[in-house]
Length: 109
Image (cartoon, rainbow, N blue to C red; front, side, top):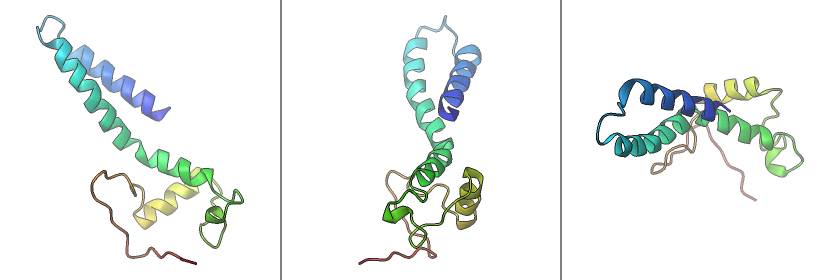
């Protein structure tokens, strides 16, 4: 929902104020702008998607969602605050670079 709202708001702003229909390359500019808008809005809404993914496996019975491997979150706000304090709200969002925070530990069996 947040992605669609942001995308449509940005599209309306660009079409109403920045791109004039009388400009002869307006269609080409608009087609490139749509792609950039999608990338920009997805970057801004990525923390919501990440919290949603965390809550999907939160105490669901899978081993990855159980308390010894993951915390049990009470609400999405609790999950957001935890990820924010850990500096992990954008974990996995980079296409090219991957890093592991110093506080992370993994259990391999």
